[in-house]
Amino acid sequence: MKVFEVCMLIIKRRFASFVIYFAIFITLSVAITALTMQQSTQGFSVVRPNFTVINRDVDSPLSEGLITYLREGGTEVLLTDDKSALQDATFFRATDYIVFLPLGFRDQIMAGSTPILENVKTTHTADGYFIDSLVNQYLNQARIYLAAGINPGEAELVSAVLEDLSLRADAEKRQFGESAPLGVYFLTYNQYMCYILLVLVMLCVTNITMVWGALTCECGTCARHFAHVPSDSSRCCAARF
Image (cartoon, rainbow, N blue to C red; front, top):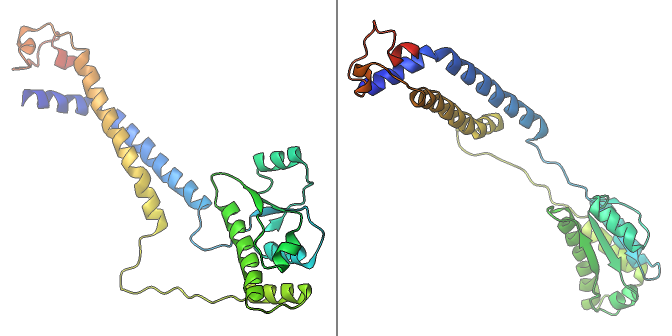
């Protein structure tokens, strides 16, 4: 019990520093939460990644139709078919996805075969995979028409594919139950609060242990594990807390 009495005495003598630490870190927690909330959004917004199409085949309605469809879901970035330029654009994230249409692309599609398309995606992001899925949707829809025996002209095929891919389904979000979900502000605040409390505990314990480590008690009574702390002793370590 004497040890705890000394600890409480230390806390009482250094209560002002504990309050300062608490105020600083609580303010820091609120500020970080506010800044995080400004950068986040609770709504839904459509992502429009940057993409580049390098056409090594002849210009055809099929390739133009692919570019037209990709423009609906992304932003086209025009680049030359130069290795250094493409590497720089990918490294500096000027474009998120580069697809190469090989020689014979149009003929392979019209023959019902599947052309092998090379592509380059930026790392650590899903933007490239999103554009890649759009490319696959366009090619798969064209192959469905050709596999079904519907073999119109190339322009008519592209028009039918784009018309099918333009169809959209409406979705409605509903919430059931009486309890409302927790706000994003509250969740963000609690994410940082645990670290703030951990730092406060470490600072409080450190202040106490620093005093214990610096003890150079000269009174014999105090040296016997604080069995008694004489209040009138100027040499007692408890008087210096």
